[in-house]
Structure formats: C-alpha cells, structure tokens
Image 1 (cartoon, one colour):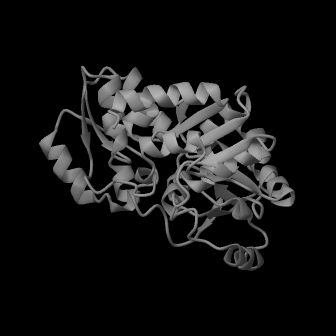
Image 2 (tube, one colour; image 1 turned 135 degrees about the vertical axis):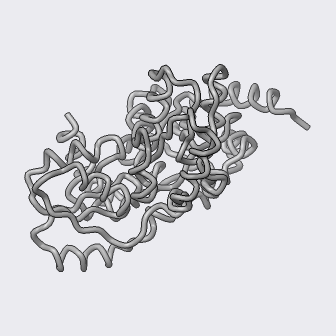
Length: 306
C-alpha cells in the first residue's frame, strides 16, 4: 500500500526511466499536477509537448486533447491516461452532421473550437481556443462564420465582433452550462467583495455578469495579476483547489458545486502510475490522412493567432 507522496515518488522515477513526458490538464486533481512535466489547458499542452525531449507523451486529460497532441507530434507515442475519458461537447456533432451543415451554408467559414474530435477538425477551415477565438474571428477574411460546437463561446465572440454573421449549433459544454444566473446571485450575495471570473463556455447571462471572462489559463493569470484577494471561480471546480494551493493568502469560492467534469475526474494518480508501468491507458492511433487534414485547421489557427 502507498500513500500519495510515495506513489508520486514512484511516478517521478518511472517517467524518468521510461522517457515519458506527463501532460496534465488544469482540470486534473492536484496530486496529478504535482507529478506533471507540463500543466495547462488543452492546446497549450500539445504545443509544449512538441518541443519536449521525451519520445512518449502521457496526456492526463480527455481524448480530444490526446488526439491534438498526436497531430502536433506525430512521431511520438501518445497515451491517453484513461480510455473512457471523452468530452461530451467534442462528441456532440458527428462528421455527417457537419458535412450537411457545410452544404446548407456553403458561404460560411467553419471555425472549430479545439474541443472537437480529430475527424471534425479535418472538416473545418480553422481551429480556435477559448483564448484565441476572439482574435481569430476578427482576423478571418470571411464575413460569415459557422462556429462549432459551443454556442456559448461562439456568442461571447459574436458579441465582440462587428460586421460578421455567425451561425451555431445547439449544444455546448454540459458542465459549464450547469452554472446559472441564480448561482451568480447567490455567490455575489455571499461574497460581495469577491471578483467573479468565468469561462466563456458558461451561459451568456453568466458570462455577462462576470468581472472577467476568459480561458482557464486566462483566469489563473488574472488572479496572479490582480490586487483583489477574493474570487468566485466559474469553471471546473478543480481550479478553485489549484488556486488555493498557489495563492494561499487569497480566498476562492466555486460559483457552482455542480461544475465538475466527470470525464476529467476519471484519471487518478494510480492510473498515471499504471500507464507508466504499461498496464493502463490507451495509445492514440490516427491515420496519416486524418492527421494531415486536422493539422491544416490547427496550422490556420497558428497563422491567424500570430
């Protein structure tokens, strides 16, 4: 039997022996973040992994993140920490449905949130992250945009871009949409001095009420640079814990106790250990054609984001 520290020590030793780079999304638990080589949001991790010297990448996150890492580092072995860790938003639109939408709106550029499957990326014109979506939407030469799959992020972008037409699908992140305007009212009343920081995957009425809306990384940077000492956090609740560790002199409150990503929580520290032993996880396999198709949309994102 191991305690947390003993298991972490074994993981650190194994990853060095086996030449493995551990990538941990910020929604993972604190004990996993402490053994990771890189911590961040979905696309940022894949970018960091490209230049990592290790030949194997262990993605502690969900499937689309591991796929993106494979697309950007095709020569490396990419392992997903838990085979069942998917993303409901990434999977809510099928390739067939997207092809039909493209036929219905042939004059629209298809913009895909990075939270999509590799198959969907291959059918799109450009990818965006929550941090880059606004900038890229402004720079796109197209006047008409079909934004998939998150209408909440898309509407947040639309509200700040003039002169362009947007179309969306029904859906969004089922975790962030659990947060309601009533949650905002309750937490504002409980913590009147606290600033409200939310992810734009939240409902429009929640985002509109925030002092700051931005990506997970953006939220954490905002806390770092702010003189305030109390914050209400409107994204996956693990961020509250991580911020408490990083800034123990400040106070953090979850906007909603329901904002918990079950898929992210599938991965445990023991899963990471078993992956390093070769007894767990799943190697991501993508065809060359699929990687090439999806890479075009990601490369377009990098071009516009510059």
